[in-house]
Length: 324
Length: 219
Image 1 (tube, each protein chain N blue to C red):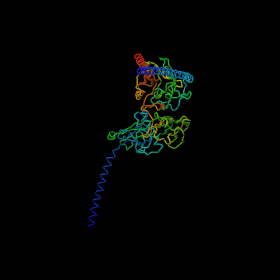
Image 2 (image 1 turned 90 degrees about the vertical axis):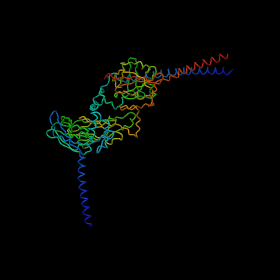
Image 3 (image 1 turned 135 degrees about the horizontal axis):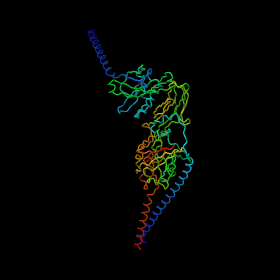
Image 4 (image 1 turned 180 degrees about the vertical axis):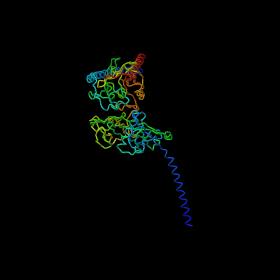
């Protein structure tokens, strides 16, 4: 009897296991709606082979329809709120690329362009993706792929035909050392000028390795210059960014700009007015911000007092005269 | 002496006191405005001497490439996130001189506004020139912004910064803004106007507001 129960139990368990396996296979297939992405690299109609491309899922749209960073990128102080212009998108892509390189983040997939300049990467799903290529030197020419931020929607994923045409810059590598520079800039909303740190430390990286850490402050005009190998991949990264600041790393050939924007938190008293001036200046006036300054002498009491005085005198004289 | 007679005399005296008070206020205002004008003229002469007649050429910075796409390409320097540069006189910071050729007036412009500062000269209320949202407030004292309402569309306003660069603005329109309506003062910055001057009306209730757009920069 016991043996029979055991056999039935075993059979039921096996059947359940088989059902679960089949179910989970279907479930996995249902979730694995991701597809491949084709990258086509051409320069003046010529295919550009041997560029290694990687893709990273950096964010997605939240319930409010706003982009937010997710996963490995969630904690980076990079704002995706105002990426409504091409230059803002490029700045965000450049900044996230710096973090990928310097923090050695792992991509979803990588691929190298073939003789036709084509590379195919897999694992693309709905979301915001960073597509970045590895800089490399071919002969005397340095090829620098521009990182891209691309959003893939459910419709695009369902259609399944995803193709992007990345941009690249080509420059001749000089034989001698090149002068590089980094500058620090601030965007501080009005009324928050006191929130700007007095100095910042910026790490300079050569091919992903720390080359030097420099302190930028008003004494060096928030700038630093150095000489380095032009064939190397140079990056900069700010060390310990103050809370309530976002960062944008901009790069143009041999110069870098580290731009910090102050974003007041709900608990921070920004002291800003209702104006929302975007010029990053502070109005340190001492007047009442709710009212425009009183820009005139006090004249209105003059006619009031004079008029009242004349009336009082007239009435007074009349009363005195009547009495006489 | 009857009560009515006393009341009549009291009213007469009270009336005389009120007239004297009004007269005193007139004298005080004229004296105060006269002293302020004297101070402003003195500052203007000194500031004019400090500002170079020809703007100094700035060395090109390798970082200029980042300033080219900042939306303010009419400007050659990186000022979008910086305040207007200033010059210190007697501990006060000045950002330049405003000239109103049609009214034959010139004013030094203080960097920060406060009521004591506004007794010296018109002041920057908010914004910056490079941000195309500079707002300047000034008293309606005689010799200050008392004739601001006489500016008409097309009249020139010249802002000379402390480097000697001249920025020519053209008056586009004038308006009256309620003294409590701070938001209206900012509406249209960078789109409808690049520079605003304002002062009180005689009653002090509203602000005569002159809006101007940048038409030319002379370096």
